[in-house]
Length: 180
Ligand SMILES: Nc1nc2c(c(=O)[nH]1)N[C@H]1C(S)=C(S)[C@@H](COP(=O)(O)O)O[C@H]1N2
Ligand SMILES: [Mo]
Image (tube, rainbow, N blue to C red; front, side):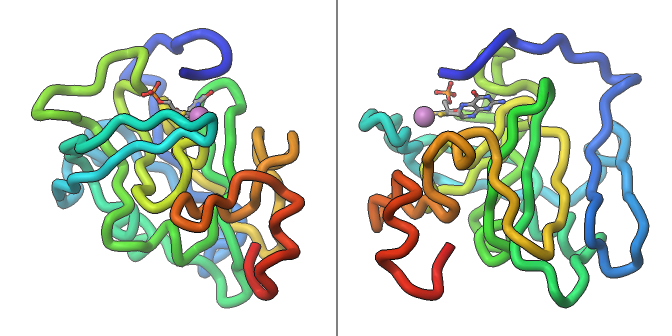
């Protein structure tokens, strides 16, 4: 389930980017080989689409997002990140959600590399958030000092998107003071 075409993977042109309000003020870029050298982990989780379907019990494998946050940390006043994919798909996530120990830059599901339709080579998996927060064909993030809304957040979806709180729509953002 996604908007638009499945992008073709070209390893020589691919990179992961950490930009925006980084602590050192620099834009950081990792090529495919450097990404392949990062520490890896496995996470078992369900995928919950806000349109009320789920794919239960996925065995994800990849690089914990916090590995990349630790390498290229945000400035002190950063509140969120705009995580993005090929073709401009993006989503707003809080820094604490990005650095959750279960948040993964997933390359494999069920022991197999991701298929092109499901995000190859990398998709972001945030198990406790609705799955629109996790771009397939993931390419990086921009650290934000003020919340900027991503693809679905601009179209009326929730800035946080916690699936256990059923945070689907933007109008719910006022219901939990201090969140979003
Ligand atoms: N790049 C990109 N990633 C995306 C989307 C998209 O449209 N583009 N859709 C999201 C939504 S709404 C869902 S429910 C899941 C679907 O993942 P699946 O196709 O692996 O089931 O991908 C998410 N990641
Ligand atoms: Mo979705």
